[in-house]
Length: 324
Image (tube, rainbow, N blue to C red; front, side, top):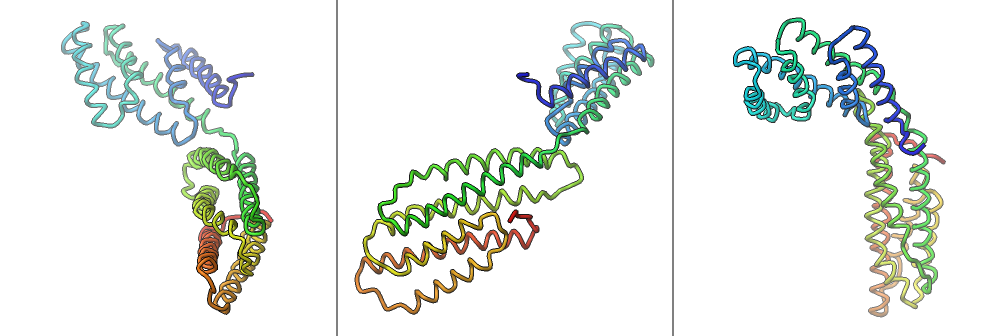
């Protein structure tokens, strides 16, 4: 059903539970408990907790300040106006302006019954506790994002593999025509995956580290390197000059493209070291064109080495699990 998401279901259940419990306790304005529950239920546990804190303290402050104002100055519209003028700056200063709506409704309840008695104050407190409490309980049950995150990781790794494969073909076939769409697609996938991972982080209040978040940051850093390499690859591939190191680097790119999902960079880094050694052993360039091609190849070697080092460092630091 359209719009029937997990949050919608939780909101419906929370609202029903809140008004049912408030009704069982025979509380006046019982329906407001459902409204509080609805307003407190957010996408993640962390956001829900922050929302509850702000609305609870704002409502408590309004109950105290409003009762004092009405009891001292009377239950008149002008007093309500004065209360709001005093109250809003306090919420802003306390950084709890998010609780304005619920706190104003609480005050209006007192204004409606025209008596700040202990019974009426307790009635409002019970409503606040029920609404926020139900929101906290209902939102403590969160779906697992593990499968969704793993799916994104597979798609991202596939795109990286395609990009590196295209790099390899670029060096082997000068007439190769690549539209570079994978660079845009993988960037979109990274942004989407990061949003999911952030939600997952905010659903674990006591867990500060998230390996998937570090993984995505690593991929973002690697993507920036690949973007920087594209134009240089175009220059190198456009040259008809036969340079041995061009084919060697193409094979290294091919090997890396086949092991994107692996955390082991040992073989690839060793190949790059051998490649650097072969460059040092070569005779000096015989022409300006050969010099430029070899310089660009050395640059590409430098960048792909950084690409691998980023992966190696993140694996060592946070022990990111890779498939393969």
